[in-house]
Length: 109
Length: 118
Image 1: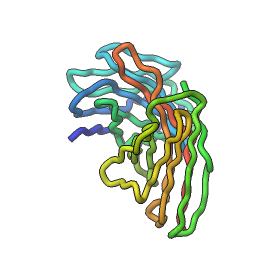
Image 2 (image 1 turned 90 degrees about the horizontal axis):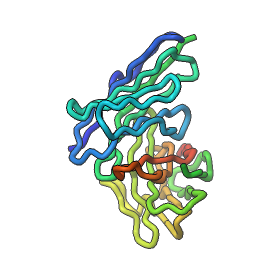
Image 3 (image 1 turned 90 degrees about the vertical axis):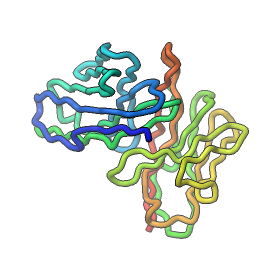
Image 4 (image 1 turned 135 degrees about the horizontal axis):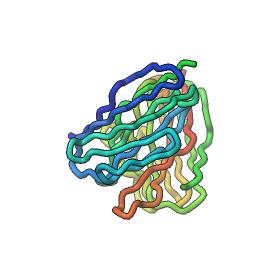
């Protein structure tokens, strides 16, 4: 059975800290791994990763995929209170997204 | 990326009634998806809305409870029928984005409908 596991489930840090969120997966036909940020209702797309070892970067956020070890990490540097959200990882397996449970990140001022 | 709107944005409904949620996209898309997110949980796919044919439902979801319409390539509706408090959730529609060179696709989401059943 396809599954995506995120860790930690929740994380509380102080503004300015760097955080690393983890996503591991076991799927039958991997096509890509996606990261989303969910603040209120709808998730917003962050990154799509298809190749191992190539870092995707957007401002203070970056992500990388390891297809051999079947995991991805999402890094956020110099965190701000606006980074507080649930971060969702999903794996595209045959065009079906398998979702992780999410990591709830709280940034304290 | 596509611009997606949903109506209503939120509603409070009595048990036993039905609510129809609309999803409008600003461009023609082949596949539209309906998700549910119950409080404190991740997203669960309800069904894939196909234009010109019946929706494809995931395990645990049936057409009688969640009828879906897809009259054209820019619009879909999801009805939550005979509601109970367990149906209180955020309901989201989504569409596929443009593909990467390897043919994999990201999804974009509508703003969601927050449903509370009393």
